[in-house]
Length: 313
Ligand code: CP
Ligand code: NVA
Image 1 (spheres, rainbow, N blue to C red):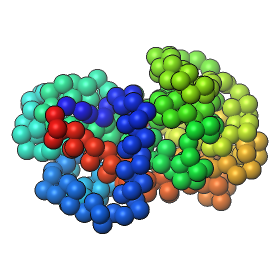
Image 2: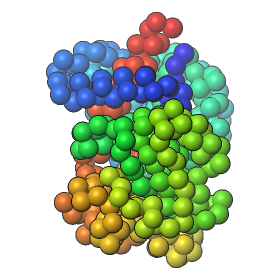
Image 3: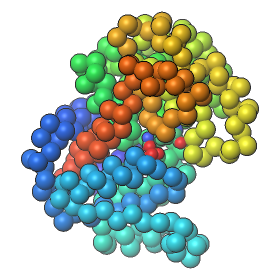
Image 4: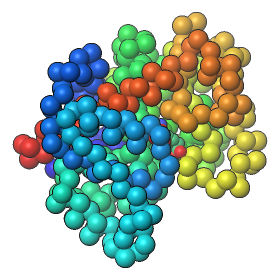
């Protein structure tokens, strides 16, 4: 049974194939109107969401299927009356696919271990693969391809989006530079870096971590940032984190050292005046709403791949 827990579940060929299907779906959605006819997607969210929740539901409807949004707070699971394995074993008897947004990646792995249907990671504390599939599609569109591009991520390196960017860039020949404060609370997990470096070797591309924001941004094709206050971070951490991350804010000055035709990305939700200035996110280089749209197309391709694999499995 194939699931999507992190992008490294796949190899480069599969990843590029799914990106191509996403582009095909985007170009001609009507051709896929019955591709998942009568299929049911079960969606379970432990954290807030706009894009993931709405794009998955819209996506499965456009493919001819149906979505069920399950509220953990009013569930036996949330009330501590039913275990995660039992919940998933029951859901697997009804639904054809599961998307889960969870606090702990280990809970997602437990879900996968007990699921009889494909499970898609809709974000955990470790990774956010669906986001990065949409981002790679967006870079492909705006930069006319992936190989040889240089992406600079500024801000929180110890972060689900950063980890999946490291995986996705390394797998597709995109150089990646992470500019973040030094220290294990802010830098990507060493195991993710090691895996990204191993994957990048096949393409001869670079994986760099530096605490120098300008050096990370120098000559980049893409500048990417994400919230300093991810859903799982205690709100009481705000002042301390703002002080720590402010040198990594994406400003016009940072954008001025990148390529003249570089693009700015943020997975959203965004906080203007924090991880980037309003000028940058609302400026001409920003492609953040194309990214958000591409969640829909990328996830439809992911769902169709997993349904197809399950049919053959
Ligand atoms: N980028 C993203 O996953 O957005 P949501 O938290 O709104 O789903
Ligand atoms: N790193 C962010 C991503 C939000 C889509 C978070 O976990 O909240």
